[in-house]
Amino acid sequence: RKEVEQDPGPFNVPEGATVAFNCTYSNSASQSFFWYRQDCRKEPKLLMSVYSSGNEDGRFTAQLNRASQYISLLIRDSKLSDSATYLCVVNTPAGGFKTIFGAGTRLFVKA
Amino acid sequence: DVKVTQSSRYLVKRTGEKVFLECVQDMDHENMFWYRQDPGLGLRLIYFSYDVKMKEKGDIPEGYSVSREKKERFSLILESASTNQTSMYLCASSTTSGTTGDTQYFGPGTRLTVL
Image (tube, rainbow over all chains, first blue to last red; front, side, top):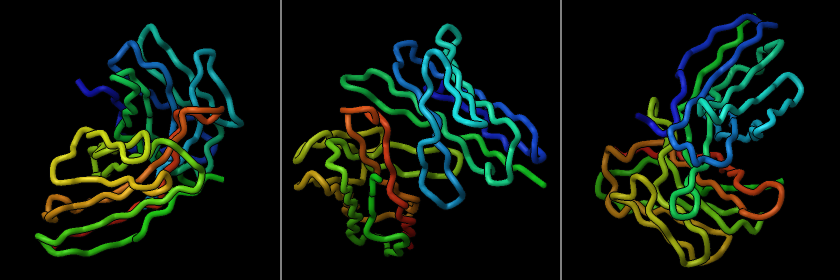
């Protein structure tokens, strides 16, 4: 089993739709969690951190479920500019900390 | 704003050549990382460094070495390039202190093709 797993998609949604991605992680001792966004042929950039209490940034909401070991990202009112690959990132204790990137979920928002 | 720069955006080399990829960050970050990214495989960690002159192997260090002589600079070296090292190489940096602790900031990437 991969340490961090994501549905690769692609998710094809119309503008204005709500879309949700999940990401599961295998190490229950994992301590910090992030969503990154990567545009085609560009570097990954931090979208948001994921806190235990959940957090929201505009149209984006991230949630953490420690019991089931997954994090989620909800995008409301999708825009064309949201089209990108979304990477789930987990920091796991491994002699210091190890940062593990999921392979990403691709989103296409269409007019 | 954190800035991570990489020496080349595109690079074409021949099999057997020695290849140097340079990465510089301007935010005094302690930690620096080298990844490669391939379709369907995501980012895989090659090497990382938590301090000057310090290096640790990541998940796929074979065929690579690194150098960190100064805090701001982390170099990836392909001793003898092979075609299976054709990939996108991404450098990142992070700090363990402050509110941005653990967040990795990436350079624009170097797309390396080995012929």
